[in-house]
Picture 1 (tube, rainbow, N blue to C red):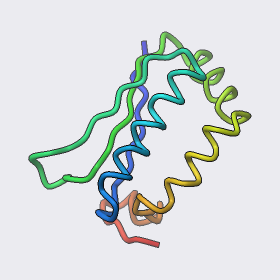
Picture 2 (tube, rainbow, N blue to C red):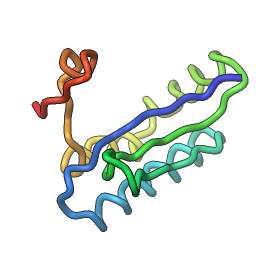
Picture 3 (spheres, rainbow, N blue to C red):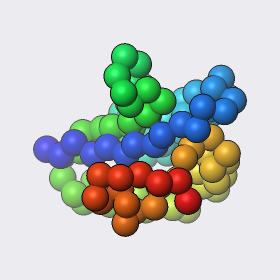
Picture 4 (cartoon, rainbow, N blue to C red):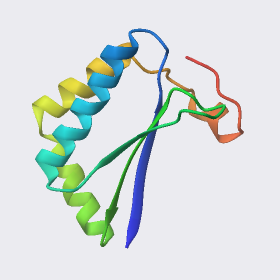
Length: 103
């Protein structure tokens, strides 16, 4: 059994729209893949505004099959592109070293 998760940090702009967007992503992934995806939001911590999507999968093949379904789903990809207006993009080189810097 594997726990798969992805995080995104909201920019703080258009909070209601960004939460609605995150909820739509969750619903779309669950609908497309058949997996039970959960959305978590940090509230009382230094990480306020951080969203976490997570799910359990029995094996890596299941995760890979789900990803294959999402990559060809236009509605999912439209949601991912729309997310650019709500989340802070972090340059990976800095994220690896514990520092985040918007790009």
